[in-house]
Image (cartoon, rainbow, N blue to C red; front, side, top):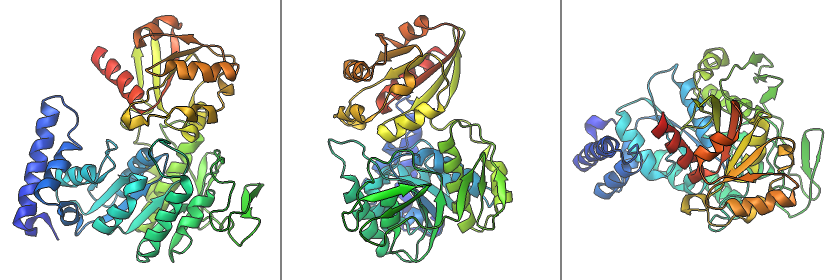
Amino acid sequence: MTQGNMPLRAKVATQVSRTAAALSRAAGRGDGSVIGGWIGLKIDPDLLEHLAAGRAIALVSGTNGKTTTTRLTAAALGVLGPVATNSFGANMPTGHTSALAKAGATPYAVLEVDEHYLPQVIEETRPRVVALLNLSRDQLDRAKEVAMMAQLWRTTLAKHPEVALVANADDPMIVWAAGNSPTVSWFSAGQRWQDDSWVCPECGSTIERQDGQWWCTGCPLRRPAPQWVVEDDGVLDPSGAWHLIRLQLPGRVNLGNAATALAVAAAFGIRPLQAVPTLSSVASVAGRYAQVDRDGRNIRLLLAKNPASWLEAFDMADNAPTLLSINARDPDGLDTSWLFDVDFAPLRGRQVLITGDRAFDLAVRLDVNDVPFRHVRSFGEAIASVPPGRLEVIANYTAFQDIRAELDRVN
């Protein structure tokens, strides 16, 4: 189905969605990626299904890395033609609806999907490929336990054997969730955060790990052989060919995201030699990894919203003065106890500043971890407290948005 032959209600809803999103942007009330979809779905509850019909769609889901992997995958699929995508990270059905309405009749779409909404979005968009990145603890006050999320995915994917999967061989929860699907392309980028996958989701026995492999001690669940492997600063494809990956994004984790994007692109018939050059075009993802010069300081923004992503942020950050900012507003989750799951020891030896609504929760954690710090009341105070040069900023979701807005206001 194209937008030209959609039902009249869907056509009206699409136009209203575009208009509402445009007005939101013009009024400076945001990028319109939620309000447009919300209004469109109020007019036509089936609008997402109508907009998805006729497109070849890839969905990307997981606890961490969704937004970056979606951007990389959209860049790779761009060699085939125009690609609709929710590039600002609005990853629930309202955001998907707004993105597809705004894009018009593109032949392809790559959509980032919140883990909880993956079953619904699979039903409504009928994707060709679903990429499963990882599962770990997040938003403890309201999110499902990790094993419960894996079970939800496993049940959903079993109902859709027609969907090809690109899945993380290094995460036992992902392997179990994808285990009943007939078409799976496995990728391997390593699993630095392992504290949510020591217990087998199938039988409850211990997961053992050695030399990059893992296996259950009580049942046949074990790491499958991956077809896509991060090796050094490149990726091995299923043929055994190695491809140098040149990214503008920092950290080994983004090589893993690139491997995922290449695997998804391959499911659409795109050869790695075609896709690899496109990945270097991605420089910043909804402000993440952005670098801004201000008052002689080069400020880099890193988003870290849960223990696994903080571990990766420490890997990406240079050994330079570092500002940590923590809030606990609704989008972040109200429970900050997860800070005690993060090992802040990598910050020892550098100048550490803290700020945000819950800076004192962070202060207690750093003190327990023997990491000296200084509390600052504003981003401007943080800038004035460090010498010229690099300033790394690591913040959770709303704290990140606060700092990004401050930089946009000044610059």
